[in-house]
Image (cartoon, rainbow over all chains, first blue to last red; front, side, top):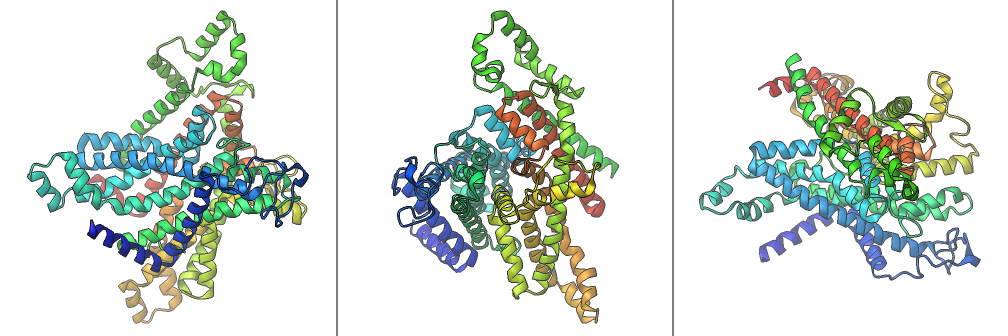
Length: 289
Length: 321
């Protein structure tokens, strides 16, 4: 237990020394804080409340980020939108990561036909450009944040499966795993206690990158009218609503745009930083710009 | 090489079969059934005879496995169904719109290469200089700005600051007026290719930095070769191999990304057709597009793999072993 805590502290220390990792961590923490406020309903005003006398009001002391066409407070909608993004991203990545990693570990560890069958199934999902696959899923299930999460999870499932399978192939041949098997440990125990802890590094990196992509795709689907539906606040919906009014009220576009950029960049930089810290072999090759 | 090609083509078949099953099953998973989903509340007004006729039309009166084989058999013959709203066969609609999407993706790739390669090269050669910093900033922006945001910003700047609308008027095909066509596609291609330009810059820079540290480069320098020759003949050739891989992988994704960019810039390509079809619940069209794009995507990947095998014969030999 103490060992784990020490290792985690060491990782955090190395991450804070890595420039892109530290910047990513800061952005992600800021995003999480705002999203948490949104989840708890801690917004200055109700996100759907309309102040018709203050329609398209520029940023001021009363409305720090201005208002939209219906006089809704943009700051409150951004906070509420962050909560939607976070909920969709975490649900999607938890589903894709949990199932994808389990399938990848199973395929890598079992080998043979099981591996072949599972990986061919993953190839089928890989045969579609990511966004098209998400669009097909949303077509079948209908628009909405929960279905967006499912669509994102299906797209990311094969990526997690591949990321998990690769290291399992080499870890399962190592002496300590062979020893555990020789001692008669059940396959589940070998996988959970000996294989899983040794393949977490690439999975953690992938989680951060997947969260970035999930955030982006949720916003894209909502922007296209296929994700979160108005009047609910979502960064994609807000950006889409700003288009016809961009000349009269540029703040409607600027703030959701900045929020999407910061969120996407944060998780991406954190992923890059984690890769540098957790997997020194890759250091430099994918070094963040 | 012919054996390698045959093996790769054979390996493609199960994936294609899986793709067709997935696309078929997806449309059968629509809550309710496809008739209710397509007609909405009007489905309630159908008489039993009308409903039975529609079920026969969609093949819903047969068992699912038979339905699949009928659908797949028709698809193999090029019959992907009929679009009610467009009054045209689905395949004809797809083939009519696909060239624009392909052109957009190709143009984006070209713009990304034209910006990413020189910037990556300069950043690596002038490591830690202001040029390197500018290149890295460009890559960072590419990473952070999603294409729908960049597209929205570009339209805003063009229409508000310069008072021009990028796509005012009808879209002109490449063969009709190449110059006007390129004018119309320039900003959408910039939107789509921006992020990819950043990725190419990052990859070129890090790959070249790595190559420049290799022993054979030191050898080339120490035997007195001109720096220009060391860079162009010895470093760049090897440094560009991972960039080629990236280009191969990303081209398919550019096709997917084109779906959003076409919608933003109101370009009548495959993406706009699909997104409108989703809104109009034109399931046969969405199904047809999914199958078509997956096939193109798979063939594209195969073509890229074959290209690698040609460039680097070790790949085909390794696969053979």
